[in-house]
Image (cartoon, rainbow, N blue to C red; front, top):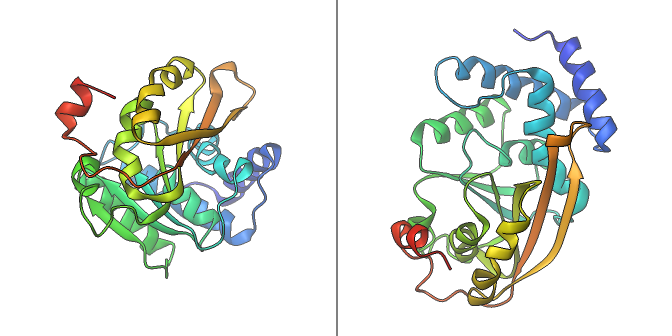
Length: 244
């Protein structure tokens, strides 16, 4: 078990330094999430980051950084493409219970982990859990062009992510991609995908989640200008072999 007071001290220090406000419920929910993540990580390979300080900075602050730099209106709908162990979607839900979140991942183990986390947090919201590949679900009329926002963190290169994420977003909605410091080339390589898919990069934010040089991050906010052609997304083999 993690000592709550130790966790509280570390969490308060890092979140306050980053400029993210929180209340007692948010703190306790992150504590519950952390305990469960560490416990389940001993059984399954959910995360390589197990140090509490690193977890708070590299998982939690990284995930919720979008709330510091961008406006997500109240009751927005959001889908996390490749949710993994719940990053960024679970921290976003803890911070913003009003968000209607869909958790999408091809691993049943990870989707079940997220379900269990939200049960432990006594989640009362009607969230959606999908165990499937993004390129398949993106063609499903139930989920296609239904969301205000799509987010994705450390899943694939930006030109590939655009094709996977954009079919889920309403016209006028946004895809927010979480990237590391060395993403300049990715942004350049995505220019054709941005054009073909009728997108526009509205903002990029460079920031650092800690004082260490290798903890620089970039958030890329991309607006969807028009309805997506039904031919997208293509099969993943086609996307990966012939990216836009």
